[in-house]
Length: 109
Length: 114
Image (cartoon, rainbow over all chains, first blue to last red; front, top):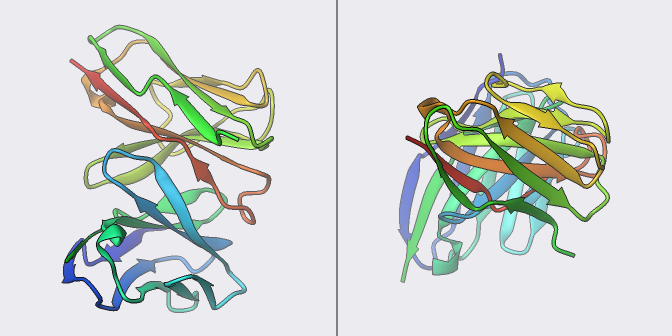
């Protein structure tokens, strides 16, 4: 059974730091992996989608990598800002999305 | 282009009552999904649909029914609500095969069953 784990569960950092959020999964037979952002009381916003054949995807200050063989993905946030404060979720696609429980990020001025 | 919308945003039910949650998307997506989100458990798939007139069970389907009579709408029904169904419900849609295309989520419905 596919299990997705995100570490750390919570993170608090000063503005300007570069961050790495981790996502690990137990079964490497995935189609793709998606990173989402969720603001309190809101829905999920898709940040990046990495197909299983890809190694990384970039969007602005965000970079996500995928190492399928080791069951790991990282989301790198450069030069963090208070507006980046949110919960970040990763989900692996095995013909349905299996979600991790998220990393709650707080960036303080 | 409103994306994915959900109605209602909040609802309080008493045990045994019934209700229907409505999801609508205006992106002409084939696939639609219903999830529930509970603290410490992440999002779990309840039911999904791969096209108009089709439905399929997800990970936690018990106590829920769904219908997809129109391509743009996906309804989630609770016939006899239980306190264990207190949760935040999210609808999502994707263009086509979920192994290729990303999913787009609605804002959620917060349901409390007393």
